[in-house]
Image (cartoon, rainbow, N blue to C red; front, top):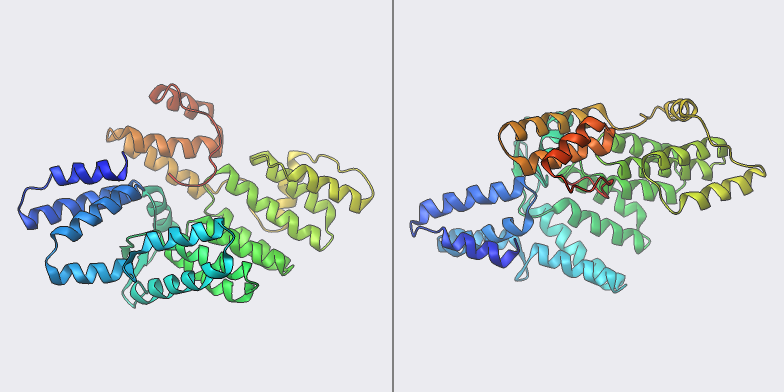
Length: 346
């Protein structure tokens, strides 16, 4: 359902009782947030703004707008500038958005704001990053907004300044691999093998798609190539394509062969696992990620929530390739495409 249809549907549900309508809209906003439906979340927020008392309305407007423009619209304008290769103009606007977010949605001694996009991320975050602080959900995906700012810093040759910015992005969503991949890119640029491996270790712990796992191993391969640990670099490239093919990998392997002056030999599975473990990294998906996807799929299906259950089953299947899980998915959705996802959204 598109944004306009959701707005019309929500308006039809209004009773005229301001208090009850606020409660209904808040509940729907939470449902949209848990489902990762930002169009729905935005629609619910718009109508809440319409019915709030004037004083409260002005405060919510202040928090969610920058110079009269909604924060997600500001971010989209920045993205459009990047697409148009207007990097220089995009940077000051992204910096302004970053300062707005960190000032108005900063962490305190008792509470923190999080941009967790769906129930899978909610559960994974609570298990891997437990906190006694109250976790308040942000109105928009601030992790992505801040990562965009860090990207612009790198593009404007301010890589050192981008590192704390990316750490701030991670604080808003510790289970989003996006900012961690950007961190790895910075350490690759700086030829800091130690930090590439360290960031990769953290990313593998949260990676919930084969594509994310493959990128982790490719990053290590790149770093090992820089320090001329060529045999191990080749093994990591092979580890990467075991999880998800990428058109750049064959060229990277050819480059390694040229540097070595001898052909690259396809390693055995044992050789791959042993080499990955040599760098104190895990091979394959995190057991915790698998357990969270499995637990949530069972929970949703037992509650009759077919759509949410299917999303978690697909995460589980893509990580395990278990034929029994595939059969379950096809029973629920006979035309479900059995392809690897491009990100970790549930």
